[in-house]
Image (cartoon, rainbow, N blue to C red; front, side, top):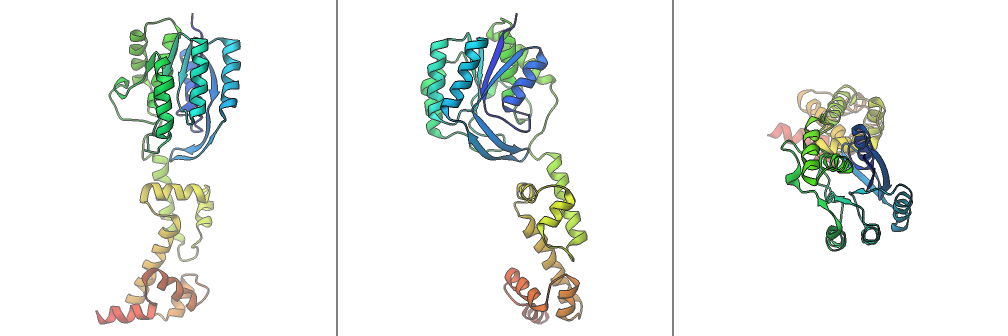
Amino acid sequence: MNTTILTITGSDGTGDSGVQADIRLICELGGKAASAITSITVQNTLGIQEFHDLPAAVVYQQVEAIINDLQPQVIKIGLLRHTEVVGMLADVLRKYKPRHIIYVPVLKSTKGERLVSPSVYEAIERLLLPLCTIVLAPSDLPVGPRRHGQANKLASALAYYLSLGETEADAMLHAQTYLKTLPADYADGNSRSEELYNQFLTAVERNYSHYADVAFYAEQLNVSAKYLGQVTRRIANRSPKAIIDDRIITEIVALLTSTNRPLKDIAQRLGFSSQAHLSRFFKKHKGVSPTEYQHNNKQS
């Protein structure tokens, strides 16, 4: 008969890793999951923006409440970001002695973001690893593309099969087999970001002569300006404002070199408040005034 599985890790608002994914997967398999959260993250499929780490005393209170009441014999540990939390967990595990302790090394995100400092991992190696019955390694993962939360899902499945009383070898085999049946959630360069980026470029092309404000485009795409910036930087390594301004500069150059329009007309056509406004904008980006640019282009 299976027992409660306690997962001690951070949250992931996308649901593809962290405590949310642990609980979902364990319950889908038919197990019973309990949790203690170590860190609340602000993240989406583009990566982690912020960490809000819980104090060791708060993590301890969560762990103690579950252990005293539900007495889990399988404990899975993931994201730990402070030496005080590591030390506290080591003390609790030495005292309680659960049958299985699984540790999933969480040092960097799939996108390469550093999640844990070297000093914290040194504490993990010294205090926690000697107590673990299983420490997942990259070689434990089934062959295939590296996806967000893949190691986390393997560890959750492994915890479930161990809770049934299986040997470590059998539980690992069953967990690896189960992982291969799961659909991909999202991989690096997810289609949502690429789709939004292309929609942004289309909106810029359609509206650049009237709107240069990032907030306008974010509103048109029904996202925040902050999220739009995350998307453009992830895909093109440029801010939305830089992309908009470059399109406007390209149009100014085209009008300066291919027409005889007065600068005042060009400014009006592209939504500048005045000819002087356009001139300042152009010089900021090109290093010369529109008149100088025209003159230099004619000479060349």
